Image (cartoon, rainbow, N blue to C red; front, side, top):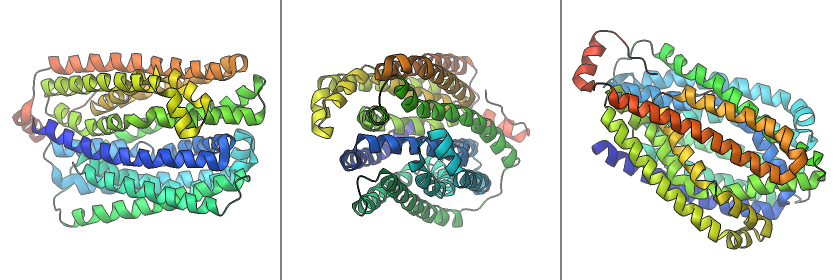
Length: 459
């Protein structure tokens, strides 16, 4: 019961922070669309697509690995090994963050010319490269705070980072010609870099005082356990994000193949991904917090062999998500035109909001389902479904968009989201039933296993 109350409190903290961030982000996105237009948003989204792939390499699964590894140690009562685990994760993060920096910085020109096929993105990509080591190191420390029950620190840093990012970008864009999309995107990239630097400095300042006041011996085989979680997760993430990047880069190209001009293709892509989805995803901040905080809660229950606790937690989360998502779906459908006109002064945005309102329950349920799977050690299954979804998405973009243009893109998004949710939910149902049927280990049994020198394996 105490765990549920703690989960609720941490969820409320992260939700409040996420709500503040999304309010700021949505206002910023509206201002940005007015400043650089739908074509500028589309161009920036292409930069973001490549930066997400680079960030995947920089992080290489280390945020979730940190959360899982520390949750296991705390669940076993081995708090003294926490700092050793964090140190290993930081070394791992630094190595991959620096590797990602060199690849993107020196590969920006061929990526811009050959992949994106727009030379205006090269300058932004080189700036984004400097953010990658910062992001990877921050991921470790944020994963630590989530696992150790100090979500408020992560929430505070995220709010400051968002404010700094928006402030810097607005200042830099005010000094830039709005018609020069290359320099506008570079200004946005510089704002992101400064915000990431501030974020790392803050999260490090919050972590190191805790380390100085904690003493204890490190657990055995931490490096091996870290790599067993991180490496498979990293390679799966590379495959999934690489395919998603390919899909996003292909969308404007295939829209042009349908007969749309280059500007109309970028505008249509920017409208859906950069204007509609921030509104559709805005209310999901509660569920995003739940999904992240579910990982240590379910990990602790699994370590103790508490199947009843797992079943109760998952059931409550899914019931809450279903009720919440259906309510949001109805509100978005009824208020679509008003939202489009009020926020972006665009009828087309309102039309797309009404269409995607039907997808909201599936999208929101999938967020929580994915968090539950990761908390129960099913990250490889989750990644398998994500990779399959991305493969199907690429094939559909290639075959459907040249014939159906933006209507085809809407179909692709619906199909892929539904596909992923069906398989993820089926796997979660199976795992919860299996854990519920297993005999409870309990803390005494867990201590006995720890004393025997055997380490428990999780599916």
